Length: 50
Ligand SMILES: [Zn+2]
Image 1 (cartoon, rainbow, N blue to C red):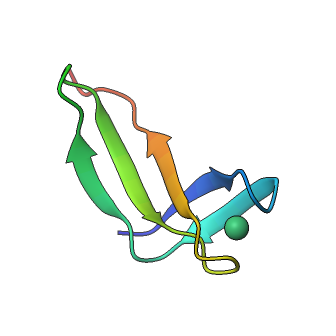
Image 2 (image 1 turned 120 degrees about the vertical axis):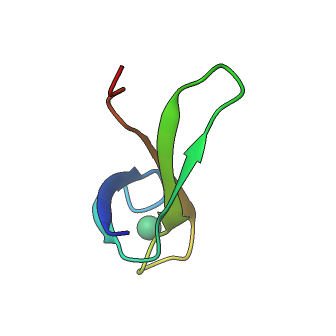
């Protein structure tokens, strides 16, 4: 999936194209992928559908 997340290394939003959707142990959904510029892991919490 593609999502836009904040990269802490670039200090700005990057469009991540290899994102995967995960669920945290406490039930929150998040998108996780790799920054296309610096290869740092970028995560973003998603709005819950519940
Ligand atoms: Zn980056």
